[in-house]
Length: 186
Image 1 (cartoon, rainbow, N blue to C red):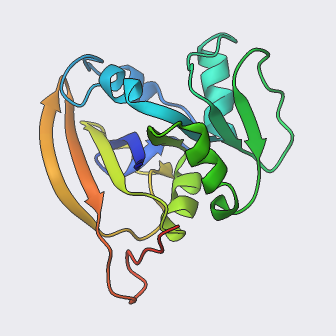
Image 2 (spheres, rainbow, N blue to C red):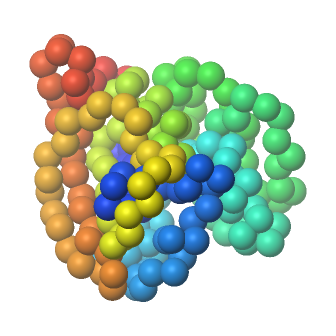
């Protein structure tokens, strides 16, 4: 079972503006059924993990409709109102204390670490990310919220184009215990 961090980024490494806007992303052409497309990726996932800001963005932009059938683990330091009928599990703290339950809920399928960047960094520091998928948009924000504010050593597996995006797929590379990209397996 693989934990994937599948995200989009500007060319300068941001996934959102400082005020959590994704307008830069939503204005770009991408085919959800194309190479590295969202639909095929999501179909392979058994469980999702996201932070509170990402959860609130999804709820707002989906107008209160939960778009995912998979169990979703919401990491949030504050109590968040959960959508009724959605398979949501609110947790807090160190991802290593929850990873076994997350993997069990995936039913033998893979796990999608949706984001945001701070949560992805917590998973990276704990050695809990196996693969990283980054769809780079032809946008430079100059500042914002980074897609990965933690060191991580990667090996490139594939690069494809999908609409306006350069789509990359990496394996996380175990590194010597120098602190850069070092991983602990759970």
